[in-house]
Image (cartoon, rainbow, N blue to C red):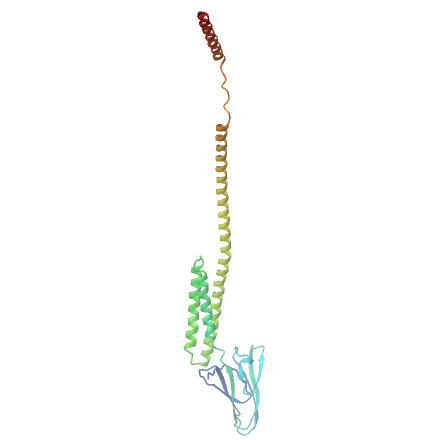
Length: 267
């Protein structure tokens, strides 16, 4: 059983002796001894002691019959009771509390696994180096917490102090993890933008390529149409020049004259 304590005790004209028993367990026992120093008189001894600020009423396993109340000024709970003690009488008080000064190993493991997942998600992005840096920072701090809890401080005050330092480390770890998750969110935002830019670029390229093919196709159709017209159209009669027409007529007349001469001779 672990026993830790840090308290304030008010006594009116009395002697209060207070000590701690320290052991390794899931609970803490606070022991105090109230003493009536008078050798001849019976007295009422008021007892009041503040509990560590991490302790809440639900963390008290056994109050030892003491009343539990909250002091707003101190920001902590305290236990109190008035004891009727005879001359030189002593009263031993025991308060058992849960050991809330340990960070669960499951929480440490969870944070380490979260850091690993984030680095894997960002492994192929521009954010990888930053994410890996944050992961290394997280691992280093969590390792400090684990080591602190494995090698427990033998001093009750030191035990609580170590826990409070570990809480600061855990807060820093959670801040680093939040920063890493922000990188993931940024990467997820940029990825769709790049995808759309790529899609638009491909569409523009295909549009230009299609336009080029269309222009080439139109030219080929036009050339083919011209060739078809050239081969399919009827041949136009050749126009004869005036002097050629005169020569033809003269040749015909000469031919006729020659035929007439032959006929005359045959007669």
